[in-house]
Amino acid sequence: MGKVVEAKKLSFKYDKLPILEDVNLSIYNGDFMGIVGPNGSAKSTLVKLLLGILKPQQGEVYLMGKSIDKFKEWHKIGYISQRVRNFNNSFPATVEEIIAANLYHEMGFLKFIRKKHMEKIEEVLRFVDMVDYKDRLIGTLSGGQQQRIFIARTLISNPEIIFMDEPLVGVDIDSQERFFSLMEKLNKNLGITLIMVSHDLGVIREHTNRVACIGEQRVFVHSSKDFNEEDYIKSVYGGKATLLHHRHL
Amino acid sequence: MPEILTYGFMHRAFIAGVMVALICPTIGVFIVLRRLSMIGDTLSHVALAGVAAGILGGVYPVYSALVFSVLAALGVEKLRKSYKDYEELSIAIVLSTGIGLATILISMGSGNAMIFSYLFGSIALVSYQDVIVVVIMSVFILLSILLLYRGLFYITFDEETASLAGISVKGLNLYFSILIAVTIAVAMRIVGILLVSSLMVVPVAAALQMAKSFKGVWLYSLLFGLLSVLLGLIISFYGDLAPGGTIVLSAVGMLVISIMVKSSKKKLNTVEMTN
View 1 (cartoon, rainbow over the protein chains, first blue to last red):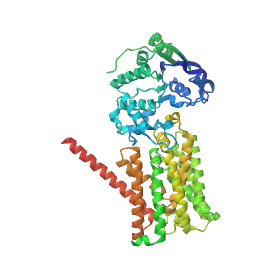
View 2: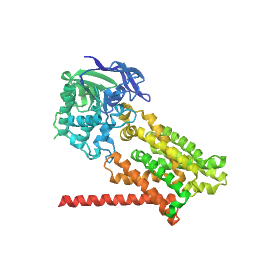
View 3: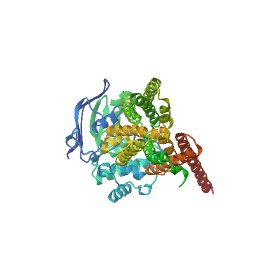
View 4: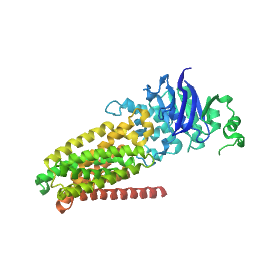
């Protein structure tokens, strides 16, 4: 399996405060990688560095074998940011308009939506089971439904890698289950590499195949089977914290 | 032929007015949805300083206003980066600079009557040269928006992801700021510096009540913009009123009607649901 994302000796500081130091990370084609860590441990920062939204002071990022500065095929990369659902709920845009926006690079100079684009929009909406919502205003949908629309928006440009930053915040438990069965379809059936930031250790261990733990400016990668929540909690929070298994009702 | 169409200056006013009615709400849709409603006011006050400078220096005031407001738009963009968490501060800083400069420049000159015609708009003084400039600039603005519509929509909704979709966010933001500045310089001759930003914002506010999509908001804004300008020009001609004010009040009237229509629709829906 080839490396699709690689970070080499990455260091990043906000002002003079070190956030990440000497981070090495490889993500392979077909991985479903979870990124976990306590609040403020730079999970989102790491994703932004891997996407080139932030620039590291030291080190390099490679996407699909190319240095990020030379990487041009951005339509192969999907990103569902933490802030994506922070939009104003009365924003007057339909589901179709939101998804069509991501066809930007395919639309040609005049940016007209053609029949093939419309068919593609229907196809991705069918994939996320939201085809009946095409003409609805985005703000009138529930958190889980909006999440599926943003996944559809990402899918329309046929990405090979999708980064997701806390995609389950504000999504109810039933929608979370639908979300993971959708992720499985993307990962197993379509072969898309998934990278997901989450603070929920349980779901990460259950659904991903590898876990990157961030703490004290470092990153450690385990396979999900070897990932031990108790050890992780101790190493990150010290001996003071214990793990309490519970279910959300 | 109705009396209003027998005057040459009214022909010129209608041509320039229709152009202004198309460009102001078109730019306004993006301004309102990006929560930058006050930027129009800011740039128009700097444009006033430009008009005063033009009169002082013997330059066609629309051109000097254009230069001043484009520089101000670039200044706002620059300051927005310096005060990322207080973006509205950049608008306040440029607004104060514009008013300060305008006050000094106006007090230095003696062309107060001419300043007034730009401040409040004047259809009687719209010259052939004005009409040519308005038409050329408006076509330029409309073509720009037609070509950049998708990119601007993406940035307006979700700036962070837009750059990953292949959109040059920085370049587009800068170009859009310049388009706002050009729109103000073009529209001030008809509606007046003090009211330009209202024509950018009020038709859009009315459209937001009616439309069910982004495209719908744009089309409704154009409709409300056109109706307000035409209605305003006619009423101001027969009532001998200030055209800028009449145009803007017509737009406000449409806003009030659209709010009433929406709330009565809501009531009807609730009644139907309870039955």
